[in-house]
Length: 433
Image (cartoon, rainbow, N blue to C red; front, top):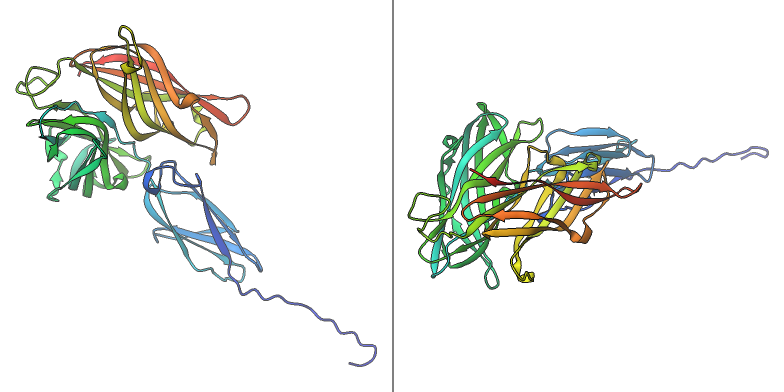
């Protein structure tokens, strides 16, 4: 270098590291059992790059077609079912990070129905017959429904509790002819005497057509489940017939398979009368109370989702010298209802109780959890004392069913994004079916 010359040096960085992407969901963790979301999760992908910067984020569900979002962030809703998300980011030098995956399970189906079966009592062994009654599609005409059940399970709640499992013959059952009416036995189980609280039918395969066109059918966790309480006694069989409804999910050509309470829940009896009689272990002093939620009022339109989980129900019978012993209690096995899906014509049954005939004056539904989302963000929703309580006058008659339907009002607490839930009676009437 000669005297008087000036040398300039420039520093160059070398970016040889790809971006790193993190995944987060709202809700932050699954809010159902077995890592299932019951509130539709919002997926947020955020990428950072130590060098030149992030060019784009790429993702796809189940390797079915890639989505490319410019910039360092992508946000989208997860689809129903069990799905695998593949995702990665690319920087401005087109350096791509190694692909990442995440399994996200979202159940948007109608919750399992909580029922109580009144079974015979006494003896050492008895049975439970499970049958499908009416089958229907909403909307559309069901033209084909073939279901293969691979096993049935019943939970015995006595002592420490245990499952009784019966392997079925895996024969496809054509249920198409049951649309409108009918009955098809699914399983006959031999059970020990005692009290049972859960019944599960595991679905292996299913094929269906609506209006002559094949449709996709979703069965959450592959199980049709009814929960509640029933008793099995000696040398008699309790028969439970339930209906199946195919309900379309939004505008998609995809349906949920939903079990709903059928028209016959009874122990075997000699006479043809389904509502009573002297034969086979029926009770002349028992009636049924069906509890349902019809809709939500007030600020329900604020919510993307409002999932309420019920853990148990209690009902108080008014007799002389009433004490705590006059409460009848039943577990609801954490049945969950999304209040945003309910309308006045779309009521959801939360309990079906077999009760002694008489006058009842108080009903309580205990809430174990509320998950609520407004504009993609979880908000605070309270249930005072953890229960929805209704005081009124309800008459349960022997061998009859009373329908008790109520709304849940969503009340905002002042200017804050916080709410309370309160129940309001909609109707209380005898079921003449």
